[in-house]
Structure formats: C-alpha cells, structure tokens
Amino acid sequence: MNNHSTTANILKLAEEQTFLKPSDLREFGYPDFYLRYLEKQGVLKRIRHGLYCLADKSFGQYDSYIEVTQSIPQGVITLLSALDIHQVTTQNPWEVWIAVNQNQRKPNIENLPARLAWYSGDAFSEGIEIHSLFDVPVRAYCLEKTIADCFKYRNKIGIDVAIEALKDSWQAKKIKRDKLRYYAKICRVHNVMSPYLEILE
Image 1 (spheres, rainbow, N blue to C red):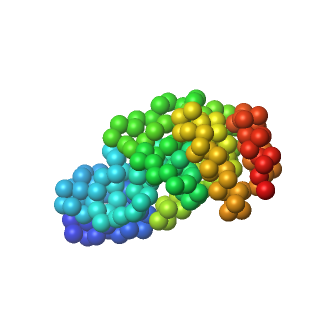
Image 2: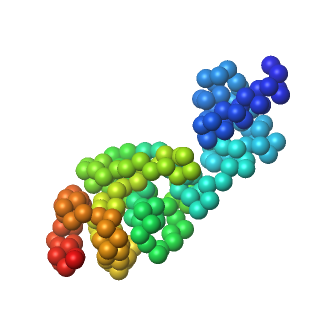
Image 3: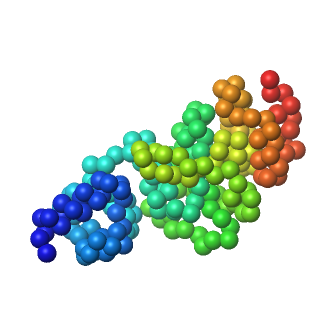
C-alpha cells in the first residue's frame, strides 16, 4: 500500500466529513493504525478515543460543544448551553450541559467539559432541534423547551437566569406563549411558570 496516497486519501476524507472513526477507515480498506500514525505526525488531532479530525480544524467558541456532542451523540444540549446556542443569555458556561435519557447507561464524561442532566420520557424526547455548528450537526432543545428546563432546574442554575432568559426571549420575539405552556406542562413546571407567563407583554 502506498503510504503517501493512503495518507492523502485519509486527509481528504477528514476534510469531507469533518470527523474520522476507525470504522470509516475500514470501510475504505485502510488499517486503523493510520489514525494514530497521522496523529503522531501532527496532521490529525484526537477529539476523544476513536474520534479524530484535522489538526488545524477549529470550531471557535463551539469547540467544547462539538467535542461533547460527538462524544455523547445520544445526548441533547440543554439549559445554559442551549441558551448560549440560542444567543439569549449573558451566561458563559465553561461546562456543556448535556441531557441524557435516564434509561440509558451513564456516558463516560471523563476528560470532557460536560455536565449531565438526566431527563426521562417526553421531557427528554420533545423539543429537539438540529443545529449546525461549523457544518457539524448538534442536537439541542428549542428555546421554549430550554426555558421550561431552566425553570425546572432553577435550583441548580438560579431562578434569575430562568426569568432573564424568558424575558429576553420574549422581548426579542423568539418564543411563543402557547409553546411555552406546552413545554412547561411536559417539564411539570406549569404552576411555577404561570405567574411569569401572565405578565409577558
């Protein structure tokens, strides 16, 4: 096998699909060790075990979001991190809040800038959107669902954060009252949110 042409083909594949896994190489008949070899050569970087991208690839402020969601593909970005994606918060979370289903095995978040939030049933599955960050698809909750989640987790992130997100989103005309009520019921915080929803103008 021609090492030069193999390397060129692998790098081209990395450019086309952003991330590389051992299974990607096997699909094209290349040995797995090329990933480690190219990492040592400094042309690939490892995102986590078994996941690589081009060494000079940068995702800017969303580096941690992409790293976490690629490592926990079944998760959904939530709470402060989802507010950040929707650009309605002054918070700058250094951890990525990621929702995971209570019925699944706990993902390994060692060495990841991640904080888990356990959801179940409709509270996990409803309101998921696909956002493109530097052409990388990531799952995050819609803004109305995110706000309802913030009220549900108000003891962890602060009720002031939830209220600020609600007011700012409403003033920016990014949310709808009926959708807020819908997700408030799903998240079982309708009674908590009702007083704040009534005064929205």
